[in-house]
Length: 448
Picture 1 (cartoon, helix red, strand yellow):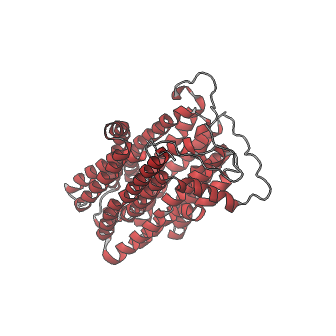
Picture 2 (picture 1 turned 135 degrees about the horizontal axis):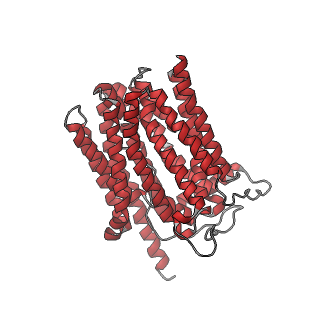
Picture 3 (picture 1 turned 90 degrees about the horizontal axis):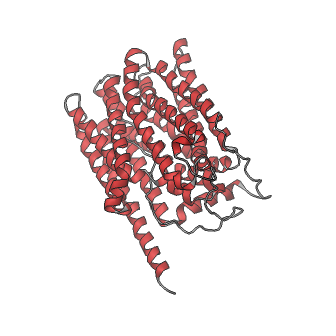
C-alpha cells in the first residue's frame, strides 16, 4: 500500500494538440548528435544517474527516521503522525501547478542544484535542534513542508531535464535505469537506516540524507550539457494560461487521463494506510527500528524484481492487459497483507506480501515517465510533469490526513483496512481510459 508515482505503458503516441504560444511538438533534439553510445558511456547521464542514486539512498533513511522522530522522542499520536505525512506532501497540492510553469521559465539544472541545497539546509536543522534540546513537532512539520516545496520544483525540473542528456530512443532505457537503482537503494536504505537508528538517535540519522543531497548538488553542477535559458514568453502571456496548457495536454488523451487518475486513486488510498503503518509497527507493536525497516526493504526488493519483469509481462499479456492485471493483483496482495501485521512470525508473511505487491505494480509504473517525456513538447515538459505530480502526489496529503483521523477515531488497523480496500478501486479509471482510447482508435480508422 505504499504510495507511488504512476506509470504508463507503451501506447500509440497521441496526436498533439495546438497550444497557446507553444511551438508544434516534434522529437526532442538529440543532445548527443552523431553515433549514439550506450547510456553508461554518456558522462552527463552518469552524473545525473549517480546524483539520483545517492539522493534516493538518503531519502530511504529519512522515510524511516522522520516519522520515528515524531513517534519516539516527541511522542506523536496517530493524528499527529498523519499530519506530519500530510506536511511531507503538502507542497505538491499547494504549488504543484504553478511550479511547473515556473520551472519552464528557468534553467532546469539550476533548479535541481538549488533544490538539493535547500533540502540539505532544512535537514541539518533537525539534528542541530535535537542537540540543543529544542526539537519540537512544529519544527518537524515546518521542515517536512519545506522539503515538499523543494521536491515540487526539483521533480518537475528532474523529469524535464533528462531528455537533454540522452537521445529520444534512450528515454525508456534511461528511466528503467533510474527506476532500477532507485529500488535497489530503497531496498538497502531502510535496512541500513534501521541499523543506523539502533546505534544513533533518529535526528542524527537524518544527517545521512543531508549529506546525500549535498553530494547530489555537486554532481548535478558538474553536468556539461547545455542548459539554455528558456525562450522569452510572448507579451501578455499569463501564468494561468500556461498552467491550463499543461492541464489540457495531460487530460485531453483518454489513456493519459486514465493512467493519471488510476495513480491518483492508488496514492490517495495507499497513503491512508501507509501513513499509519509505522504508528502500528513502532507504536502499538513496539518493533525495533531495524524490524520496522524490514517491510520497506521488502517493498523495494519487490519493486526491483518487478522492474526486471515488467517488459516481459507486457510482452506476454499485451501492455494494456498487463497494466490492468498489475494494478489489480498488487491491490489484492496489499489487502492480504493487512491481517498479518503482528509482532510474531506473521510479520514476515506481511513483508513478503507487501514486496510481491510491488513486484506486480511495477508493470504499471515503469513506462509512464518515458511516455510523457516522449509525447510532450519541450516547452511544456515542466508543466506536464508538475501537473501530473499535482494530481497524483497532491492526493497524498489528503490521504495521510484521512488516515490520521480514521486511526484516531476507529484505530490504526481500521485505517490500514480502508486504505487497502480503496486500492482495489484504482483499476477502474484505467479500465475506463482503455475503453475510451479503443473507441477513439476505431473512430479514427473508420473512413469518413
